[in-house]
Image (cartoon, rainbow, N blue to C red; front, top):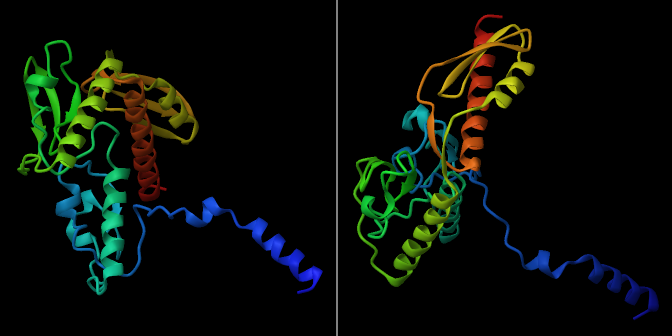
Length: 256
């Protein structure tokens, strides 16, 4: 082999990153690959989920608030083990993307995540999951959970380890949580700067009216008490901004 051939092989070897070659590509929660995954129906994904939750069933992109009829299943069912693996990875990506850390649904009820363990008179409004449902503390050892599905208890050591990890994550969130009032004034100003004419920003606590890209005034319009972390407060404000912008653009399209 000539010297030039050896040099070319050396250059090619240098361009390959072993870490990149061995790294698996992550599955996107909106990936579409021409197969209808039976484990990704609106009923199985959207239970206890927010209405604006968006996901893929392998065939089309779906929206929880639109229902199953708007979620296309025109693609064939999985025909091979490769398709089944893709559907399993896609469901994992969907559940991971739309579940907050420390509030992830596991598919079984953790016995160490009941109201008596999580709820006191000092953390009314704290939100958590028991592994099966999303719950909110309403008082000492009392609370309310969304959803009617029933989950089994942990059946393996792996399940019990997941319950222990969930309890640790929830306790960390609880230690960082504080009582406050929902306040998204910075996001209301951002909303006003991005709209023209008259528009309304609503964060679930206050309705702020914008005119000519400036806030004209705000009025309390809902539940303003909040118990959670600063990150969760920012999440409420960001979702309010996205929703308010969407409604504003929709209204502008209907009334040009």
